[in-house]
Image (tube, rainbow, N blue to C red; front, side):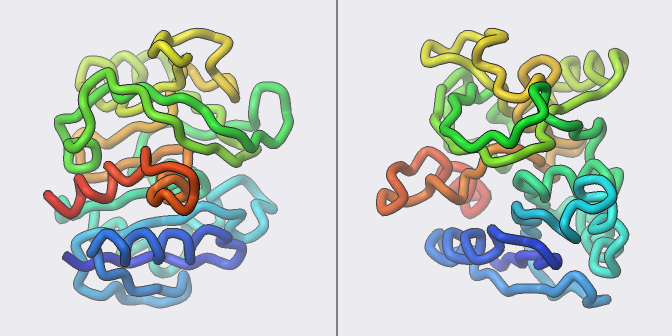
Length: 226
């Protein structure tokens, strides 16, 4: 299986993404945002960071980069796309995922470990997890407050597109376990075709024991199996 990591000016997790993809056997290549073509790959990963310095709106400028036309075409062929943190923001701005990421509720940057509950395993990203499983994954963001209108939220619930939700140690979805104010405690969603996943927490930062845990490795192992 082959993968590509898109590098934007301001990306700061692109090498982390490259490392974990290589370690998992997903054979990554690095692709510059200004490139007009995308290599023949199975997975495209949009890493975390502050693309274009987040000077306009997080992910908004990156969504207009030349390479994003190819990423959208890649997704439309039902091939896999994974966006993490800033990558999630880019996916919403590019129209590949519904909703938008707003400033955190308390208007402060958040960098800590959070608990996530796996809501759905009927997709290529979380098949190696169990439904309801609680995992610990780090977050590092200022604009992770997921918002969508009521109709969109209901549609995503009905179609089981909510993949991860912030929870407490026991898997309970509570206001206290929500770090940024995201509606329904949403931490990660997929599109209706289930080939595009966006999530705010960083699975690449907890995919090997050297980093203190392997809770995020299941995403990459699931993709490899798919």
